Image (cartoon, rainbow, N blue to C red; front, side):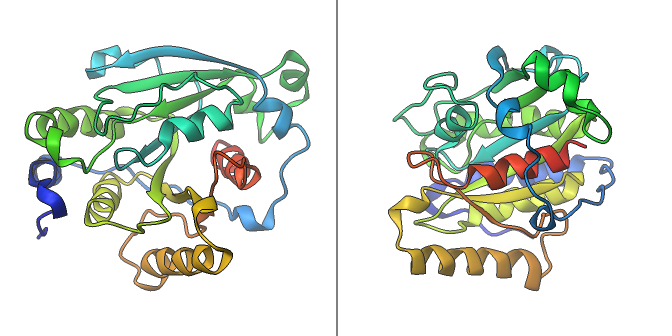
Length: 262
């Protein structure tokens, strides 16, 4: 069913493949509104300027915090810019640790965003669930061959447990380096999320490294993979483009998070 991953990362592929075969059931995919037709609520910018704290790093399911708040997660190939994106989203310089060593993150890192009291008081239906806070989750990266031999099995167990158990999980954001486009491991990750029935959305990172024409070309390509080919059944059709260094594209990301957390 699956082809081998490029650059020798076959262990991760085998781990994901075995997980797909052994999982007993998928969660239902909830319908998602289109963020293109919505504007960013006036309180949203202040919401993401709230107090962001590191909660814990989880290496096994029993470590997951209680599912009491809406939750969004970020995942992608190693060194795709997850930590930089999370720091920029939460207006912090070093909340999520960045590393020049691919494949270093081997745990699920939880962060919690507490909105300012004034914003809490303003939130009402349908945004009331966000009033008490939001979990931001940094999932372990994938696709780096050097660590897959010993990490693939651990990754499979941890991420499968996470995706199958977090009823408060609103969406997973799959980060893709704009300069490289979708890799085979990204397609494999999409299949993994499709299997579990978890809503996900692609974010093209490091968009400032490309010309406007190339940015549009890669966005069109990914959109074609998601929409026209119709194979990524749980994928949200809108493709986001982000530059963490230039702080571009974050209004659209915030809108997506707010919309998915209703």
